[in-house]
Image (tube, rainbow, N blue to C red; front, side):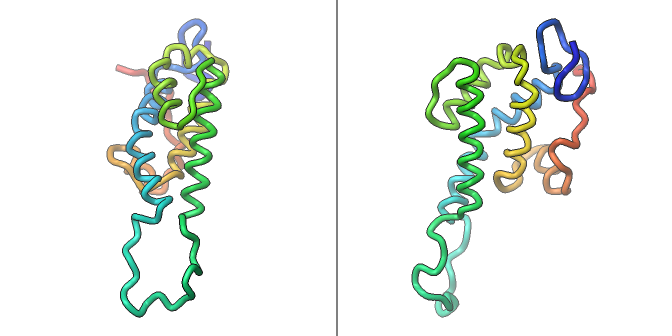
Length: 156
């Protein structure tokens, strides 16, 4: 079979190659840290307080939460819970769903929707928060689109 994400070779009955599976596992593993960072951003705890005399606006003139970060958190939640449900698991939070998908990765690779999950999650995580540690943060901070990474290379 051919990998639905990169076109590389896969084993029988698998819709993701080993490399794409590894990238999906990496995204799922990074989700806990990203989720914590995203919640801080939603609550606007990542911003310093205004200095005395710099507010310049009326009380309540700004949103009480970061709406962009809130939308991204909601999108991540919908993606993860939806795919966990497609796998037959009922979850109620993004982190529960991520844990299910990570622990069931062999079953996930066999699903015809696995390439869609990989791309949706990867793209959303790339847009969901501050750069993370490791090679992904270097790619994202350099302006590379998450989908621009070649993943057809064989694993060693």
